[in-house]
Image 1 (cartoon, rainbow, N blue to C red):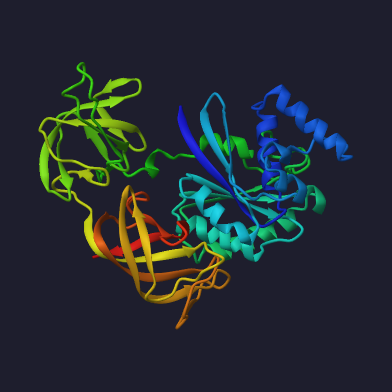
Image 2 (image 1 turned 180 degrees about the horizontal axis):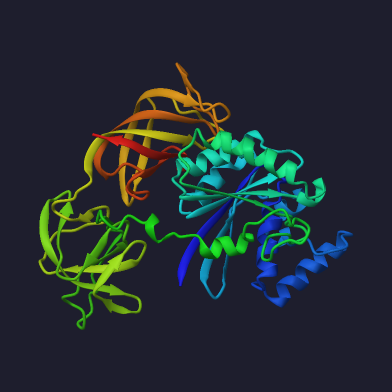
Length: 417
């Protein structure tokens, strides 16, 4: 079955954790002891019904404050598809955690409280989702029971978000009115909203087409680890482990290793379940070559006629994640791209993006927490990069403060030269 990765997004208290809990509960994807524990905690708090948000809010601080802080991953499946759910926080302070959860998602569930409508954090998260090239976005207008299941209110929010989304690069946008608390339009169609003629949320998640979202043209295989057993049985085994980031690799294909430029032929492709004849994204495999070529961690295997750009100057959109430091021109960081490290210096801070108006604010001196801006970086060592819109793996990087070893920024490559 297909695997669909989805992440929640939206402002604080829009009901993201409750929606995920309801989705798990109504699809019968939680164990009886988990439900019993949630019911016990809810009862001790004086609640009449089980608080399904507790299924994802596992940290003590999250339960005390009633907010999501860390990214919570949950797994479930239906007869049609397997799912990985990333419940991300809505608080502005934890926007960096939302970026983490959405960076690998195929679909983003952007929640809106029907009473409050579109908020700044809603726009920020929607913008980040499109910036991260999440192919499919579903706007869930939640808490419809608190606005009397009003079709007019739903249409008002839908039109407002559509106008905002017109400024973004949205590939697939769907609107669903829901009540996560009562389960309306989550797994089954709601009788309270007969005016809504679309599918339930789960039905849409099962049917959304994701096969064409993958780049199966550009072969990209960043080497994560070199496997060289030292025992007598495997003394001649030399494999290169990693996750296929793009394209299709097949036994017998001629490939080139960057940065050395050496060419060889794929002799074997190994997986945990045994050898295969071909591999494609996002499979994790071990590749063996016919020739004894020098390949190290951080190298990249591709096709000789289809290579990424080997670059030491990168233009990128950066989401700044540090609340204790700011990104400014002239500052130096460690840059991690796939499995390759390089020192980087900020050559130019071109502009900051206003997430509400989408206008470019030129002349800014720094990027602070949750700011998004375009920068030019100069690297000490070259990286093998594609534009992010072409490949999400080879088109992204993180910036690390070498003094604290904290990840301070996430970048999306717009141009490499």
